[in-house]
Image 1 (cartoon, rainbow over the protein chains, first blue to last red):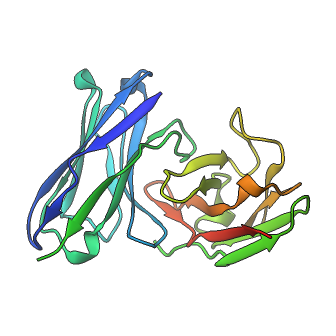
Image 2: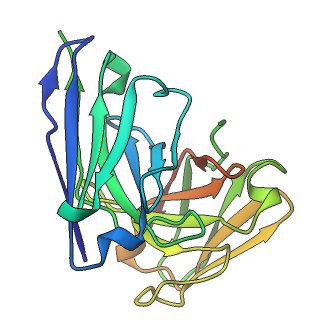
Image 3: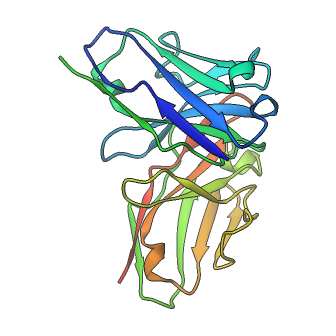
Length: 117
Length: 110
């Protein structure tokens, strides 16, 4: 079971970015997925949830309207489209599988997004 | 979506037990049995060690145990070992459409 994020980079405030998470070793299409982020030296912050089919999504208030979660079950991939980025969005972004009961297992290794001018 | 409250730090000597608390409200910790705990070593991804308040995933030593009373959940690490030194985070669902984490506790093995 493996999750591997990619797409993190340095971007200017107000810019956009798309993160990807490639899943392998399990049947991706039967699991809900989430994104969680961790600012440098800080704690974990839940970002977003997506259901098995992708029809149900939830977001933290801090990212609502700016970040969009999606998935492609045929490609075993999870995405996070990020727009109107702010300095405070700087963080390592983790994707994680949700086997149920709002638990996250496993997590990917994370990808760093830096928002700075 | 307020963060759950954890002590910033905890410590214990090898072989001792240490308990980390996680305090929320009746809208999260107290209202559901979906409390999880994660261990994070420096520069590593978090790892699930407790879910549904008391359950341990396969492969997690039984030195790790969880409990809950009212709006406060607790993680106990018994028989402390050097490799237990890490950051620990609790989480709980907050209703049916959000997840909230605690601020994290840095556990030091003296």
